[in-house]
Length: 44
Length: 464
View 1: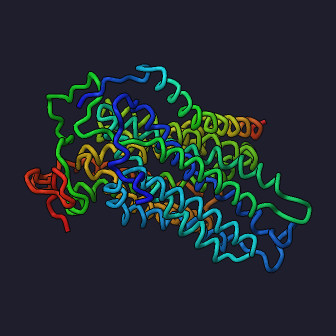
View 2: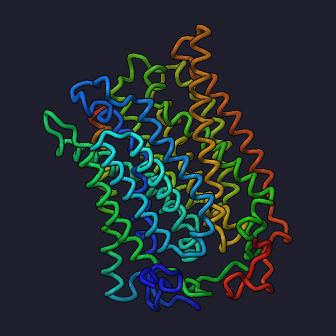
């Protein structure tokens, strides 16, 4: 069986992808930014 | 059955399902269990639960609290090794669901332990239940990702394992903020923080369990054609989970991972103290903590970078880079101290930590290349015992060699030099182990003509 879909195959899939990646990506980016800010503060 | 929605058969993807939903599902689990790396933020507050301002006689000590993390890592290794086959055969949703209950349950039990001031409850909660959640959660998405991304297995597993490295970045500031929110002048809000974090993790991991799907049988990505040129170390066949233990390849990879992690974990725990002692007057305690945060970012980024690179240059070559470059860098660190170059020290450490993380993230794809896709999650689970062993070897080596040097009159600034040279030698041994890895002998592969237990089509050789 071969996949005939791509991440942009349908609007429904696109919304799901944005929601799913946002759900994990936003906290991760927030954590990385916090760490970077603390690192910069520490150096100053 | 009420829980039949967890069955592997119920998680087969419907037509149109995008495989790019699998990495976020895996990240839902790995970002949560990655909290383990940030557990130390609770250590100091938990030594003052009674005394509040300073430790009271009945408060817990740091060595007593240290056992919580050690127990969790021990049970991570044990559960990943023992339950790997159950995870593999039951499917990712059942495994993620169970991991969520264990992980979140561990936090809730620990909250009770803090509330009642019973340390043994925290040992059982975070140490045992949390550790089992860690083990199951860590391996739960591995084989699913590899099946969905046969064209880029390194990148796929790298994304999930990067999440494990990144979990601490979320957990650390969140824990500090929650403790601040729940604390009063007469109370430290550790119990409430555990409870809230347990509930947040439960919800987050359940989203991952709901999102995950396994591909239909014989599914392939659109447009992907498996290479017709057989690569010497990459098999299209499968080795049964316990049969893998009988191969020299498994044990060589065990040592490859163990030595790579031993070298990294040994200096990971000492990075702050080491940088301050090697560069006295140049790096303060506060700056050192910033450096550790920076190194952790490289640890996380290296997981994605190196595992993705391995899809192009091969796993064996990737580990050759880790060991060759690592040997040079570990041997260079004492030199950076002798010339007082903080910049060169930071560069060396940043690359070392990226390769430490890369070693974790590349190994599932290495196992898949050698042993096939069928039991890769379970085999990976057994391999994680190398991590547990390295967790003991690394810190012990660093601490004892440093202490030996200090006791024999070596200045603090040079006390780590021998350690770094010993780590470089370990990496040379790792290089040799990696060089010895060859393709698995055909006698270890599953015979496709025998029926598999449970009546499925393919089958296993050596099933007990």
